Image (tube, rainbow, N blue to C red; front, side, top):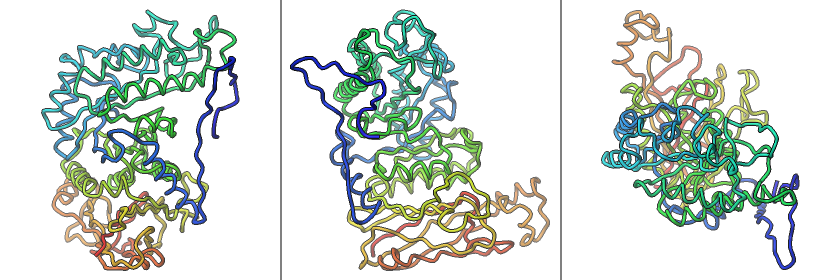
Length: 524
């Protein structure tokens, strides 16, 4: 997997010229995969990520994509931004749909001028209004791509990669601009310079949404076609280098249909990468666990989206979605304008908690504990007990004074009451205050079981149930103890008993399918 893919690669090296092959890094540890990962994390943080954002905490953002998709305008975006400001968001990001005649993904890629019907005051007008709310402003771009249905392609079809005289296999209704050609690189650099300089833009999400096909560069001639892929990547790096030097304060995020470009080359220019377009918490916990083998949490952006999830239609608890996204650069992808007051209050509390622990979660040392079984995917309740059903993470501050832990359960198993959390990376001799964040539960989650404790009968999905749900919340368990680091790591903390059958008390751990918990450790 390292180096140049030999397929379709050849290089004409003229006398006196040199060719530099890609660099690679390797690591070894006698202490297992966690130690190897920490080596890689330290290397990436110190020697790969650079510039303004190398050690700077990343802001909590709200992205418009899953809230509105292409159906955006200034009024709708400002309403979303105001809702974000109300819960503590720091950065508002306008995703796809703001330029040209971009009403869907079939048109206008390459036409990087604001749509006057959607943004009558242009990028600067919207940006200034977002900034006046007390938020930073960011945008989405896909500079390497072009739609055939665009002003750019109609004027300059020669800029796109395709094989002359052959039909082209489209991908996401778009084609790739020929970045192996220095003239195309110049065009992208100047086009993006125009976009990034027209307003006070703080963040750019740079996307790339299709695979390569029909690869042929008209600028190289028949003898140079084996050089296209390599020259393309070198051209991409030139664009990124030039733009990040021109705009050193912008936080750039790499994206390629999610995380398809999650590599050290991109991280040399962009300090974080969108981990996946799949925001489903069950999928994401495995995706992020996989990334953690080589990449630190500060490079991995992760968002809380709405449910049913837009990729899987799965329902997972809002708290679980937050817990998974908290181990990384946390943001929100949902429509806050459509949320209930209770949901908004929960989001506000989540963001405040994340900000408090952000330094640990983004720049602490990350440790994997138990991970799902090698089969991955979903399982029936039978055969998912033990490690196969649990994901366990710990992030520890460099001075080992603070730590955050997470337990994630794939599926609830009947009569499986017991659970234990084991930390990693702590100071063995130190005494820690171990605690959780007690949660409140909606009585509607218990269905007809509420009638075991209710003085009057409550019918499910009735008006009485809705009223009772507003007036009564059921308290969750409280974990609070002093425990030494060695015991936390080698024995673990036995957690409060989980719900089973009809049993529920004030200290019962409500642990449903896709349930999770955060635990906090502070040195006494």
